Image (tube, rainbow, N blue to C red; front, top):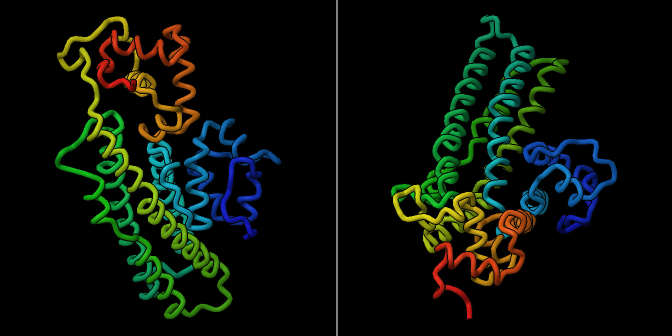
Length: 314
């Protein structure tokens, strides 16, 4: 790696790959495609609609162990994890299995080879259960949390307390092959062993991102939801105002924050989104409501019951 201590938006995206090829996986999980020439990280993220702050937070954590939790947007890190799960379950682990079958004698004559394949299949099933639980339970919980819905019987702390690394058995398999499967001039076996080592390293990194970036970001979101319960609308039986019926929940939250005198950065931190996302929402609100000043939005918010006048800063 270069002597860079932290990546910033004005650096070239190609520098990241040259420094750390493992960041190719992070790019893929954010949906960033190759062919970006000499463009900067910021330019690529803007063009490909990726939250730049979250991408940098993940890249700097993977490369340097730098934890910038405040820059992590929960929706972006969720998509990253979903894509990572899909990569492991639908591509990486099945590919290793196909290569393993080609590299060892699975005809039944070699009992050690058959035991190795059985060991691997059991491991893959364990990884599948682990990641499907995260998809179906943990990420769905966080999706509801983003809408202001708090599950009193579950929290991210429950996930964190039971979360464990899933690379250990893959490491065991690697060691078994190295120690107990003697094969001469088997390039296929060496190649699959190399893939197993890379997958092991990738899984370690993946679990660390979950523990050190995702969990703290969700904990921050939980605190925000607890401290700022969502405003009830006509949908849940309370009286609504037709004038703001076409506003999304997120737009109402943005208006509430602006009315209370919060800066774009403060709003971004409170709602766990990027500053660029806040700017986009404010621009859309100005066009939709034809109100361009914070003072005007404050008046609109009070009139339409989005905020209480007593909550406004003097």
